[in-house]
Image (cartoon, rainbow, N blue to C red; front, side):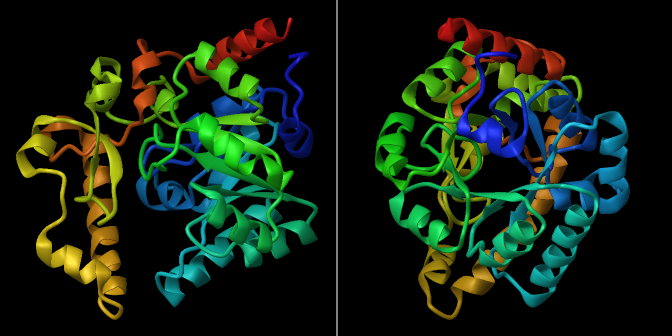
Length: 329
């Protein structure tokens, strides 16, 4: 894997600067293990691990470790939605550290407590950001690098193009990882050419053999084009990138006027977010794992334009690595 070394690969100890991003509900242990074994790094999503794929976190990490001794990562969503959730996440982070995980990606809040725990164990923390103000807050929280979520990402996408976001964040001096719009090897190489130290893929890895997503979901990704990706407020109250299905067209993409008012209200917004969070966890899980017989919200990014086959996750990593090596030759 010569020619692929970056600040990110050196920090994390991997061969290919490629992350299989944490995805609810699609981050099953088999997918995480396959990406890490091939030289990239798979990220454990603890809610998916415990509540979707029915593995106790410690047992799940040990199962992945039995498949590969290469680095794996962990996703810690640090939003203060409730004390119960925060306490559970702190226990999960402790378990991950005890089991040897040393790369963590935080999101949706102040990463300080995660950074302090992980740094004490000799680990590395990156944080999801969509613009400079959030990057500055994350850096104040002690993170070591940034996952730069652009406008082409699936799920909660950003608002800026990959090149624009890189230009805005390059002066932080931290390794930057491109997240969004990369579905084929050529796009991977272009992201590295922009100056990114790594690339995070989500949608591309859903369309793999190891991912447990329903085949309806995978086929929807293969059929979709970038123009089929729309933003809906119906999942979480804020725009989320999904594939435009008949169901999405039927119900529309905007939150109701009542929920919009609640989300803007100083006292009610917390409860509105809790409602959407509980609702989306159920609906995304059903649609992703049971297919189009259910209300189908299929999260995906504009990288769908570069995805035309369901293949082993390891082959994806190797093809992308070959393209990056060729561009560097």
